[in-house]
Amino acid sequence: MRLPQANCPLPHRRTDLYGAFAFGSVIVTCFLQFAVARRINGEVWQVAATFLLGALYGALGIFGDAITLRYGPRWRLRNFFAMTAIVTVMLYVSPLRGFFGIIALPLVSQAIFDFTPLRAVLASLYLFTASVGVFWFHFGYRTVPEAVISYLAAFAFTAAFTFVTRKALDARERSETLSRELEAANEKLRAYAAQAGELATTRERNRLAREIHDGVGHYLTVVKTQLDVAAAVCASDPAQAKANIEKAARLTADALDDVRRSVGTLRTDAARPPLPVALQQLAVHGEPVPAVAIEGTPRQLPPAAEHALFRAAQEGLTNIRKHAQATNALLQLDFRDTTRVRLEISDNGRGAAEGSGQAGFGLTGLRERVELLGGKVESGNRLEGGFALRVEVPA
Image (cartoon, rainbow, N blue to C red; front, side, top):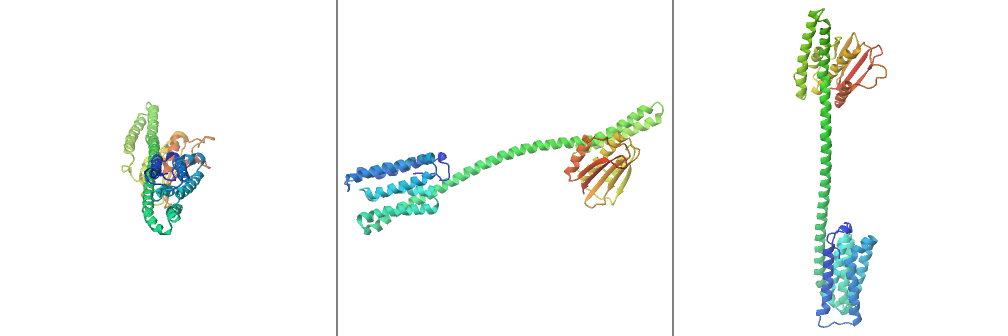
């Protein structure tokens, strides 16, 4: 007798021991009648055949799972048919009547566990009919109603109990499966959370690196230029040196303000004036000082977009000062597109050297910043000479 769920792998059925014990108990109970019966109406060969068939029936029931595991799933159905045939012959050969018929009940349980509902019903009806038919065969049709009443309760109880047990085992199996799946999902979530944490840390480091380069780096470049000029002319033109030092001091104060905004995680950049004004103030420190052109009607932009454009202007002016050797520059902010804002910084300098395809950290950081907003960055030498940096962001 096998009580575990049919869909479970056979080695993992946890009710095999209990099923085998219940199956063996039913067989022993049935055969005890031979010991307690006052009289056995039958031949010796019937008793011998009954015991032989009972032993074979018990062996197939107790070791059926092992047989199926060894020879494959097809043997489960074959084993059930063999046991059904043995029970049928044993019921009609046995000299005992009445209570002995419950020996077929383990097969009812097995059919409910191992087969589809339709097959289980058909198998149970056959076993019930075979058990009742014994009385018709030996005592005539008049005994059938009493046999039906006697066996109906036993078969119905067995079927109901087995059905409830199977549902309970199915529910437990589903619960354990869901628990395993949930644990696996939680493990994946923990792994994803760790990866997300590492990614967030990397992004924050890159953001801080961009802020330091685009903000503090820009101001320090200008301050260094002013101090170099002051050092060069301090002997010959003290007034000019003083002016350069004063400008360096003002730029240092601006750099401190920019650092404060960066430390405040650039939440809104509320301390900075509107972008057109901020760019005009920034352009004053350019070398050469660029012309500033505002195209279209200025409008309020998202803080992240304004910040990206301001940093782009800083990067462009810093590169002009450090590398371009230009005499003229232009900073153009274009609001004419209602969906995007464009910033272009161009100069008439020497442009980028041929074959220098690798962008510096400033342009790389700028491109990362803008692409996070869904924008784009273009840079390269102009046909008429010089270099141009173009940035577009949705706004």
